[in-house]
Length: 436
Image 1 (spheres, one colour):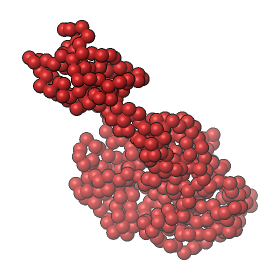
Image 2 (cartoon, helix red, strand yellow):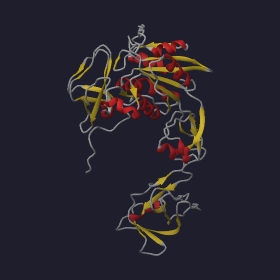
Image 3 (tube, rainbow, N blue to C red):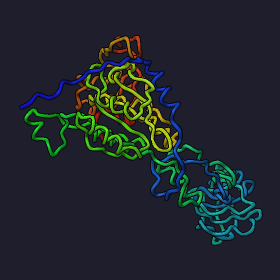
Image 4 (cartoon, rainbow, N blue to C red):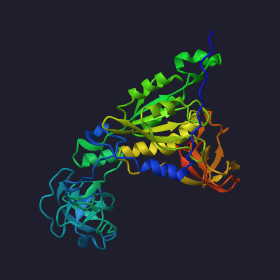
């Protein structure tokens, strides 16, 4: 059996950007994608491409917030169980009815929640404060606490011309209610970015090849499925490219197959001293590197740049191959970039101030992100490591609800000290729900 050709190693200069500078360079390159119109029922998670204004006044008329009687406040002043006020009932109004004419002093209208209030009425007396049984055709008001209350004015929700939903608003179930109130069946949304994901390495195995993993002849390709799920959750459309072998021709073919994607994410072959075939193939295709290497842990061998493509440039993210490094760099760099492309206003994860439940240690010379769990039974939430922090480990990714941030220059946060935690997916605290 012939020996394989020797691997040619290459060493390239590193930029070693700070974490903040790396984010700034990437985010300033994000240009929003075009607009498309989609059905309201299909737009959850999408960002609105333009502000949406009200074309009707809502509610369209003053309406009742209670079941009761529409009255004039002056008529019921001083009403009490011992000195009730008796009013003549002139009609009944239900939601959907037309209010008709005004009431006169000494009169009342039986009214249901949501029904239009007669023009001259300025109060709705709740039904519990009345007695309609004593005299037919009339009502006794037993309290005056509802004077001037329980009327929802026309336009309390929106008036014609109001911006109800701004551009960049992410559609949630509550947003769908507002869209329906605007009378819309389709909305202008920013197109979702397509993201080609290329994992690399002869050692990678799919679930169908898991016998190799059991025999120690390969490792699971956990990065591909993980990043596809992360892209979907970041308002993107994942395109899974078949994992590439450590072969220039195979890599070239896979990368060329990704030419139509809005973004290319490569995984692996990014560390100093590796046989960086990915970088070599990208260079052959005209790759323009923005930077390589960030002062962070995990994930320092991260790079960003551009490939020339027909009609423009394709942003390329080079993620490290270790799963935790790939996960963290996607969260911090790729995810916000995709959300910017998709038109979102808020692209960064929520950060909360917590307290450390144990010593948290980092290298001190770079920004460190530790996988932690949160116990919100204490306030502020108490955080602890979810396990070993090696970048090649995957179990901690499923257990973590946040990334504790040790800034550049901080080597340790002692137990009881405050620590900022970037929530992953705004996950719930790692304590079980207990019913009352």
